[in-house]
Image (spheres, rainbow, N blue to C red):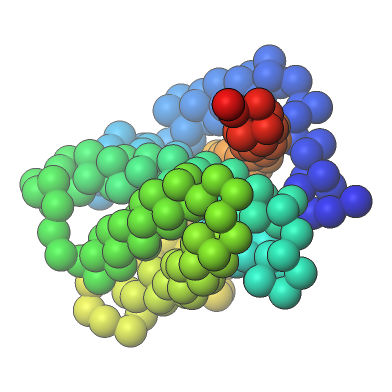
Length: 229
C-alpha cells in the first residue's frame, strides 16, 4: 500500500461531519471567543487565517515527503499524492492571503504591505502555482513529473522561511504564539485550537477527494490513449 492509498481514508470522512466542524469553528471564532482589546472584532479573522496557514504548511509538507518518495522510487501514487496535496495547499494559501489582506485593511488600513511574512507567503503561492501548471501538464510524462517534484521540494523548503520571516526580518505581524505559550485568554485559545483541528479534518477530506479525482483523470487519460485511432 503506497502513501496515497494510506491517506485516502480522507474520502471516508462524512461530508456532513466536516461542514459541522467548520460551522462550530465559526461559532467559536465569531461568538464564543471575546473580542481582542486593541483590534476588536477584526481580530476574529485570526482563527481562520492562522488555521488556513497551518494547513497550507501541512499540505506542502506532504508534498515534500511525497515528492522525495517519487524521485527515489518513481511510484505513481507518490506523484498523485503530491499533486493532490499541492492543490489543497494552494487553496489554503489563497485563503490565508485573502483573509490576511482583509485583516490588514481593518487593522493597518492597507490591503497589502511588503511585510516579510506577506512577501514570503506570496512567493510560496507563486512557486506552487508553477508546480501545479507543470504537474498538470505531465500526463504520462515522467520527466515533467520529476521536474514538478523538484519544484515541490523547493517550494516546501520556503515554508520555514515564511514561518521564521518575522523573526529574521523586521515586520508588522503580531506575535500571537510564542515558545512561552499562548498570549491569549483561554476562550481565544480554545477557539484557535479547535479551528486548527477543524481545518485539518477539512484538509484530509479535501485531500481524499482530490486523490480520487487525480487517479480517475489518469485512468481516463490512459483509456483515451489506448483507444486513440
